[in-house]
Image (tube, helix red, strand yellow):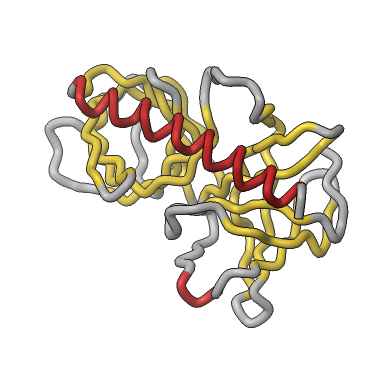
Length: 205
């Protein structure tokens, strides 16, 4: 992934409803260090949070999902671990789409809830990060917070991996209200459009 020092990129995080501009201050194969140009104090960054990164590569506007690996609030910088999968923003359909949403999750027929973040999403499934530990094939109930709305879904754990102090899960949606399905579809389309327009504005800046 060719992202160089000094490049302007877009950052999307669940603590802000819109993408915002950032500047790459250091880059290597797997990590980026970016300077946040927005008021850092109002952004509720936490290590392990998902970030959607927008950038230009080979004259194409692309996005990829990242994870915050460290934070320097005094310098308004964050370190991002890059995922290997990137998406061409010009393609109108995705198997999944990088996102940064807040969520609550619990095992079905249990009462203990855990905070979670949603890292990518499609119409049939999602990937989440959480400190809560669940098992493969376990059924989970999840509330996803999108556009100030709560989307309830029942899911099954398809795969599980540990990432530092957190667990990552691939979830298959098994039940969701049709109105929520339509809202998620609409929200993902809006996100794609917002990312494309914002990145094109950065490109022409």
